[in-house]
Image (cartoon, rainbow, N blue to C red; front, side, top):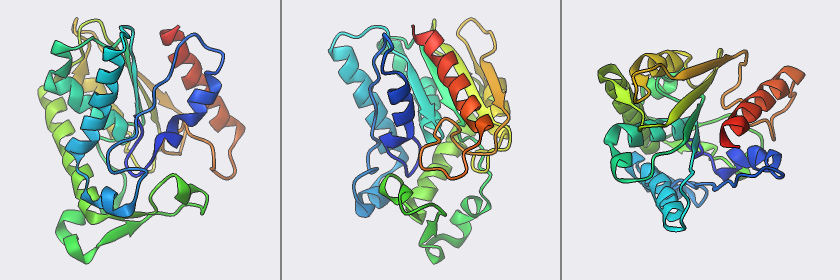
Length: 243
């Protein structure tokens, strides 16, 4: 499950890396994403969650029983909401849930004041390359930023009360120490507020990284050997749980 303003491209490197694996990958395109700006502007966080549920239920209907989730950025916040809602009480329990740079607390100052400046803002323009424009929205409408803020606020409230993963599901959190989008406080809140069904702590891996969604390196400029190592480490650890 990809993040806010992104597309399935965000997980394509893991798909390519997994070519010779014995597991299959189903990518989810969130509602309003990867289509046109009007669709994006009109979408809300409930729509985004619905897309993840539809994909999961399609796999259930096909007969899959060993299913795991991976969510990056807002995708992780979506999976948190699904867990909290009790959705899995009437569905197959995921074997694993991987949360990559999950957004619970934002590092972006403009995002936190969008409710104050509202329509004056209209949209936020994100710095990205022309190539990245083909797979991410450069212009993020203030309406969708409000939706993202609401999703994060709900997540913080739920973690404060306590969220329990589905029975038998193992949760792994990977988070960049110096994430410029999702504050590392997000990882702390997830660790404190999200537990396995037996009451044990979830597993948190803090990565020495300063990029958001460190598992996506394609189209980034100046990729370092350390960034590649972080990506590969996460992929390997995820694959070990899937095999």
